[in-house]
Image (cartoon, rainbow, N blue to C red; front, side, top):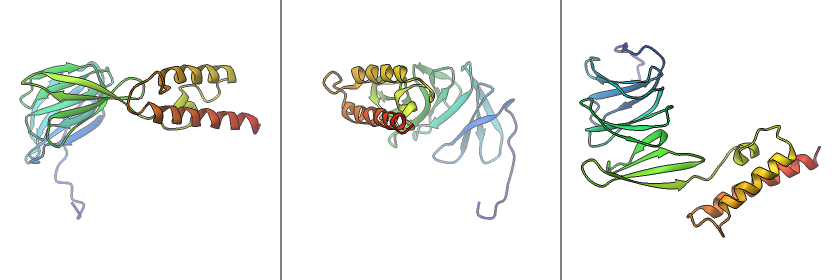
Length: 198
């Protein structure tokens, strides 16, 4: 790859290609697209092996399990789908993109609602258990508080109080509620300083 050669171009999707993933043996390449399909390619030859359909919106994240047998796809339609590389859909999970497998292939992580990650663990041949981990919000103060940048002071205060009721460690037993609350407090302090500096 250091010489910058382009051995081939793969053509098959009808819209933007938004995600790609290699199998661990580098024999298979998988691509996801805004056309809501997933395509499985023979990487060595460039041959299109099959097209997977099932999502109703753009496929924006793909991960191939290290076992080389299954893949996960995350779509803007709000679902995670599990497939085998032969093209069979195995399961539909209520998660969001992005998706990633652990190195041992036993755990799948996906996005979730409202700053959360979902962790899916393999229980049996076709079973999975779900747990949710809160992700600490980050970004500009208005992003952390979930308001528009030009929101008025009353809206910002309401958002801060709502989040405080949700994440205060006294009422939220999750492992990172304290970190959540620290981020929320810091965001609100930044807003207050911005107001006082005007």
